[in-house]
Image 1 (cartoon, rainbow, N blue to C red):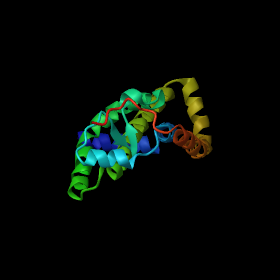
Image 2: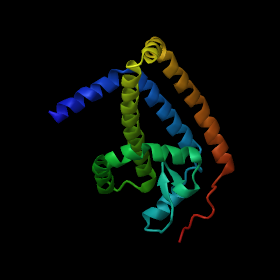
Image 3: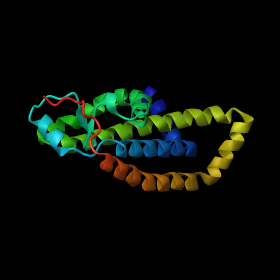
Length: 187
């Protein structure tokens, strides 16, 4: 019974157009925040694979230490925290085969980032549906939803286009700035 209700709710989330706008905005935020991190560091991943100790880890191939990251990434982590906690069982299922096949931290960090994006997207689909349901109860909200239902594809296309343009620009700037977390320890 509970599983049937959950499946019905997830179907409603996937068919609601506002939810896809929410999910697209989340994906844009995710890609720009990752692009804003320090450049990728296979050396740090290799150091950690060889049982080196550090206060940092690797996320999407890049050095990651929450304290030193941009506010953009910190806010993303805080907002996506419920989804990341809910995805822990899935994370365990994904990590086990990576260890069996001896996938290093550098490549494995991309799996982790993908799982983070997937879990966050499910969260934002859910939030979008809850927000759409709330808006439908209001007369003005229902009108806004009707307008969004007519133009949701161009809105998502615009978000995707802006993300495709902004991500390499932010990444290029990040590459030029180089490693920005000099106080991260590597003992």
